[in-house]
Amino acid sequence: MKSSLFDKDYYSSDNYNDYLTGYKKEGEEFVKLLLGLIKLKPEAKILDVGCGMGGVIKAFRELGFEAFGTEVSEYCLKKSPVKKFIQKIGVTSLPFEDNFFDLVICQDVLCYLNRKQVHQAVNELVGVTKDYLYIEVITKGSPNSRQSVNPDKLRKAENLLAKREWFKLLSLKGLKPLKKVYLTKDNPDFNYLFKK
Image (cartoon, rainbow, N blue to C red):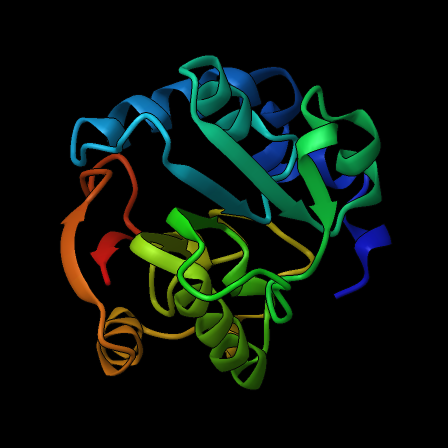
């Protein structure tokens, strides 16, 4: 996926129309939910893959954690308030040591990949995860997969996996599902925290 496609227009249109004003609050709310489910040691290292503007990184850092991100969007890399903690790296080639991060987060990234890339990305995500992996992705058949409900010119419906396919893929990598972070009424898509 070309990084130039994820530009300011992309992040300020369709269902992202309030992202650039609300990403910090969204990050804080997500981190609060996540920390209600797991206990992280103060020295925990966190990686947000496809971090966008870095709201999650900012929220974790404000709590004293070492949080870093990867992103392909040139716009986000230039405009993020936490850009010094973000590297330009795609999800299919994470250059970190195995089992390096206590928590790895990947939200709304995998739905832009074809199926071959999804398998590469999952291998990378699982590889760098030491303890917890959180995956959030639009799934085949979900209301958010419909352009009429959730318009997104870059997402291809034919590349989406069903929820059962995600569970199978992640369980084959040895991950155990712990909990959903968001209730279905708040987020109908695949949003699960896994333990390695």
